[in-house]
Image 1 (cartoon, rainbow, N blue to C red):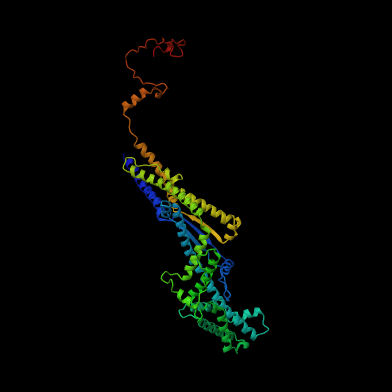
Image 2 (image 1 turned 90 degrees about the vertical axis):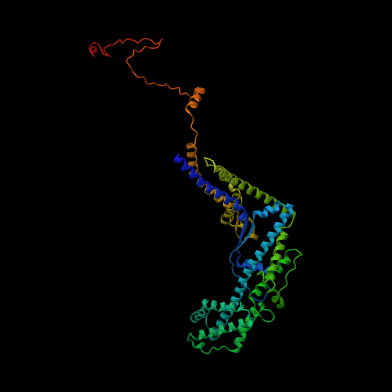
Length: 502
């Protein structure tokens, strides 16, 4: 009886764990995205230049610097309630269309924010490159004027000796970026920083001790040359009164890209955004201050949304998406019912003498079907595509060559983990369940056992049964019909005459 109590207590503890796994599996479908698609876009400098030039963002006279941006993740997710509200609504077809529109708008806002980050890097890189080039060009020009016969290698050696290094140039370009992010930033202030930096370069060249640099001075003509170069390059980012604002610079490039998308989307409902004027810049900078985004971002998001709608418009798209939603919900329902069935069994049998249950239902596919179709299979396909086949370009999709990863995920992964934990628990749980079943098996009374054997003579063993007899002093009488004993023909073998005395 003591072992029964121990085994029953062990089963009860494991039943609590099983119940928690069931609850987590069911709840996971509602508290995490049911289906999410994440795409990683890795653009290089040439891709970014193509995007901006095709959409009019490279129309400025400034030499735009395109560096390789970091990879960008774009994710589109759907919840269980999204699918349920669409499928169970009064008009599932319109519900499907509405859900597509909602996700397109959300994705467009996300893309416009990512594009703003890319354009910010481009704008800062362009300004840094301009400031650096001004200093380097002026330093090289000064050295060549002082030493007309000098070779390019010697120029670099002299600049290194004068400590006009990459670290020094990076420090000075950071100062230019700091100026641009100031509230009262202007082309004039950037010019002042450039003039000051060139003056420091002259001092560094003089510090080398070469007599050719001893008479270097910053003349008014040199200062004006520097200011003209700054105005020619960075002035294109400024407003009409020469004011600079980093956000306004980014907004201008975003609006130009938005205009290109609007004019190329083939839709008439979105008006391409015009380049920002000085008055427009001032107005736009506060247009969406409360929401944290500018009017340029809103325009870009609207044009991206319109472009995506042009690709996904049509009744067939809505119908196909509706069938997809129904299929997903069916798989989720099967998984949830498997876990709910096990949860109910655990709860009901918890009040019985033997609380052990079978754990096979959620383990054998039913409990993790969504994870199989929306995580395992797509994951293997993505690894094969990007790691072994060479990406979309290998399949003839050159226009998608910038895609470096595609991940499809689902909240069914929680049920998959729970099923894996059930498999681990399955062995000790099964062992204790069998022991408990044997210990709680009903005992059959002796009378019932004899009656059962009498009714089933085939169960009686056919081997001879030997009975033990007690020898006493009475004369044994053989049963009637028993043959008489045969006399021994060889008395010597068994006690002859010589043994009579015994």
